[in-house]
Image 1 (cartoon, rainbow, N blue to C red):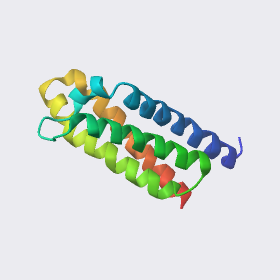
Image 2 (image 1 turned 180 degrees about the horizontal axis):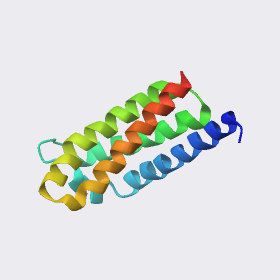
Image 3 (image 1 turned 60 degrees about the horizontal axis):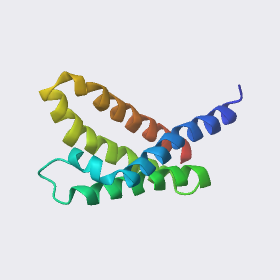
Length: 118
């Protein structure tokens, strides 16, 4: 398969789940507010902001504008989630490890996409 076609398909496949995640955050902000660490005030605000950030990252990919910056910011946000939400949860309960690994791998994918977009 042609490398450019593979990259194009890959970036759209990467973007679609973030669009869906963003919509889920906006549709169920109250339900997700409990995931925001207790030491961070304004739980539901952060859920809405995260949802908008996921949607913005997807839109950036779909319209091919500021993709490198959007993916760097997405990776940073996901790494913050790993450190503040998933790592403490995994330390307390190993069954939380899949979420840590998911966000860590998504951050890596975002950084790879960022490097391709530059």
